[in-house]
Amino acid sequence: KLIYTLLFAFLCLFSYESVIAQPGGGRGERMKDIESMKIAFITKRLSLTPEEAKVFWPVYDEYSTEMKSVRENRVTNLKEAKGEIDNLTDKEVDNIIADDIALRQQEVDILKKYHPRFKQVLPIKKVAKLFKSEEEFKRELLEKIRERKAQNKGGMRK
View 1: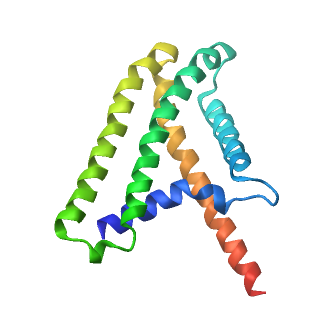
View 2: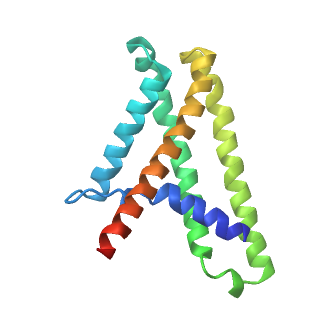
C-alpha cells in the first residue's frame, strides 16, 4: 500500500501538465505556463523587491533544477513498480522502498544545501514563506487539476 500511495502522490504532482492541458498547447508550453504561474505566485507571496528578485531567482533556479531531477527519478522509479508489486519478490519491493527513501534523503540534502544560500539573499522570514509558498502552490495546482478532471468527467456524461 505504501508504494501505491507514494506512486499516486507523485503521479498527481508530476502529471498535472497533461491534466490542465490547453487546446493546441504542447507539453513544453504548458510546463512554461505552469512555471510562470509558480514564479508569479512565489513573487507575490514573498513580496520580493526588484533587488531581492534579482539575487533570489538565480539561486532558486539552481535549487529548483536539482529538486526537479531528484523528483523525476522518484517518479520514474515508482512508475516502474506500478501495478507490479504483487508480482515482485519481497526483496525487490524492499529495494524500491529503499531507493525511494534514498531519493527523499537527496531532497532533504538539497534543502539543507540551499537553506543557507536563500538566507544570504533573503530575510529569514521570506525564506520561511518561500517553502510555505511552494507547498501552497502545489495544493492550489492540485485543486485546479481536480476541478479540471471533474469538469471533464461532467462534460463527457452529457
